[in-house]
Length: 379
Image (cartoon, rainbow, N blue to C red; front, side, top):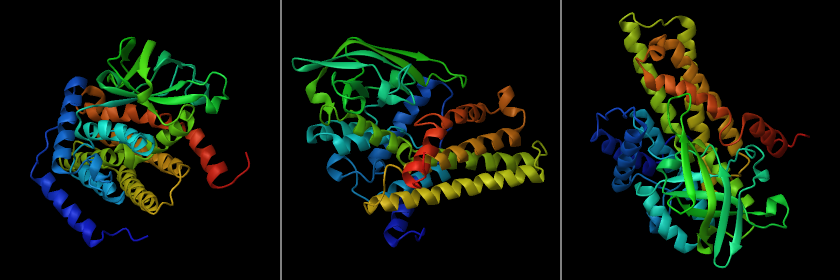
């Protein structure tokens, strides 16, 4: 494919660059979790008000009705300018757009795009991670409500979220893959308890979520009863795509920061820049560019209706390799600085990158999907 911008895309990019330039310099994000989340929410609202959030979603739901490639342009420019992608739950909006009712789309999409309402994903459980079909959280239909009991874990940003996309077992007599349904659950519902826990990064990003006789109206079910597995697989396919969760912008921002730090440190003689480290920094630059080009190809295929949920496993594998190699290179280039507190963001990014091999489906699962369902290899 031709990776150069069309005249329309070039005009869009130029307009976005001017919007970004008018807001520079962008102050560094705060270190505190709550303060950082508040700043990201503020930036998300500015993005929406400027017309740069959810640009590929239909206009009637708060988007601009543009093609999927325009999402990549937004992430490309944000990352190059050192700005955050703001929201990482855009993939949940995709699910609501695909499977939600008209009422659900109009109710939930625009508030999510503006940052007025934040979301989390209630899938993983203590005994149901990679084997998601074995989950035990139950949703029993009682009158006009589902009554939910169970526990979720590794729920990102649950304690800041207003809503949860919940996967629960609702069809008692059905086989595993026809037994689940998806629900939209307010996090303030009585009986719902959130317990955040601190990670080795120092962040409180993850949380446990407990459901004790939580009542959910049937109107808050997404799709048909028993259709949860299909919806969940669509959800994780979007979650694995770096364009749908904003990771491309984050990686470009990290690369830009590291390149600048390496150049400044080398000029002052404060950072070791031997041939091996320069080569690895160049390799990370190539990796980010390859990922960007691959995302453009994926989004172009999506625009033509040619993409598949299987192909995003390739995106996830490329993203993990790029993120972990870049974080490792940053630690080697910057030396002891991150370890003694001079550059806490770099240490956080390195520690966080270790999780990339697991979240959204482990590396082993992605390789199996690519081997058996994309390449047609035997099990």
